Image (cartoon, helix red, strand yellow):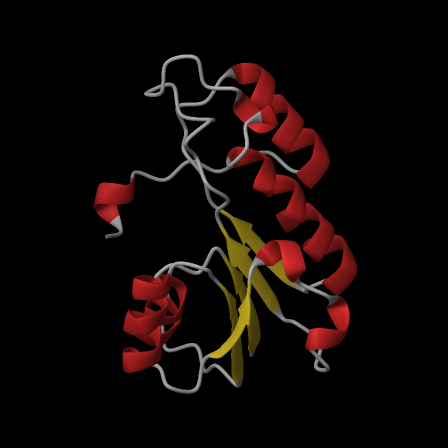
Length: 143
């Protein structure tokens, strides 16, 4: 399976795929946080780092992508932040980069992760753009 992980963090998606017994052929990662990238490379030296999602270009990857995974920053979406700007916020607007890359790469499957505690307006926008209803998971049951 060829995987493209956006906002990869410490490559928890790769860990989950390993635990699930899903073989990974190539794992591409877009991440800019240096310490997270160090952890990922230490655990998975074969990760192909691509830098920022903003700078991502389709021709950076020559193979078809089977799974696109990622969760754009939630700081402006979470109701925990007073006066959050939702999808118009500087960080949470990176959701649109996920959408751009999904449309360019046309993966077989995708997983988009984010917080459940967002305003209905933002949830409706995301649902409309992604073309499917969200599925809610209690993170404490799977982490």
